[in-house]
Length: 475
Image 1 (spheres, one colour):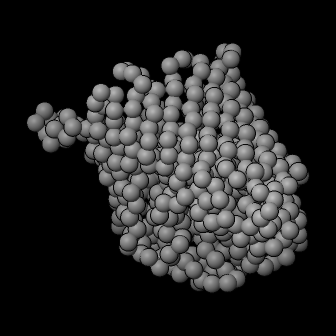
Image 2 (image 1 turned 60 degrees about the vertical axis):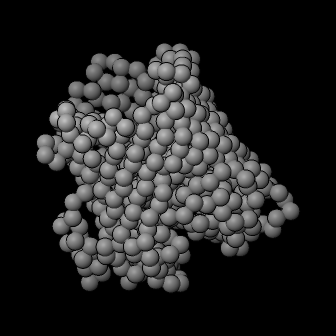
């Protein structure tokens, strides 16, 4: 009976056209449009003379089956977007895009205490779950200046897609995160690249509004403060913006080093370092990686503890390791990954800003908000043909969390769990070129069978099945 809740959405889905969870920014998809302009007198070629137009259709079905009689959910969303990128004129270029979303069918996405929806609601507007049709968002609106002709270095101002290790697209729903600010990239040398900027507004996935940095932290559920009281930091950060600096270099052959610094005014400072080694040997490319994160608080101690996003007395340290190889002949990748967050404090970075960068990251769960964590994950990727149009991706992991009673280190009351993801993707060719399909199945179960069975500990967390089917069409 419970699983029948998934059927209405799936029946409608397979009548729709239009995916993959890793939804790239508009600019990455221009090659699809270029290949469609074949006739010299076509409207497409005329528009290309004035710039580049791009379209995107997306349909997303998601369903959750929870423990026993706890509520199950499903949702079917569809949407369309259009983007325009001007030609470069005297080193200047402008970009503009927007997207609209419709809720075709869904279960009740706000069941009321003690239950709440966690996944499907982010297909729409989490601040207004009853809004099924008025879900429009202006996305890109920027002006870019290239430092010279035939260069990849630029400065841009406005609203744009941004991908960094910690502030990123977080694009596993209908639309990704977006940022507003000033951003620059310098790419004149082969082995040294610089990036940086200042962000003052953001539009998190699952919303249609643009928020100031202070307003954005707390749009999603806030969990518990370090003293165990309900956290109440939404809108109280008093932060004007985020400063981001990055240096990427290759000091020696086969080794790449990235250094990032994120300073969120009156909130925290985060340093992210990644060193990755790659070398080809006998038809295999061997890979080893090390990530290091260190955080300290910038929160004024005058705020009550419950109103502090990052406790004024806290800091955190985390490391993540990866080793594995790519088997070049058979288009396969094998990895084993490990992450440890020390007991000094919680690793914190607002979920509204992006997903965590750890090698052990697995779709549909995070370890952000926790300390004293040990996570191990095995990963396998296989492409079934040389064109990489058919892919299979498996992740299997175990995450040991701090005790549920340890609110200092367990912000979201998450039990220790094991986690499985199975994913398949297909890119169509020929007449359906531009259409992509993506299927994902997730299972999460508790490591400790003695964990108290309650909505706070189980619902949408463990003994949970998640399904998604996504169709994207780019033109």
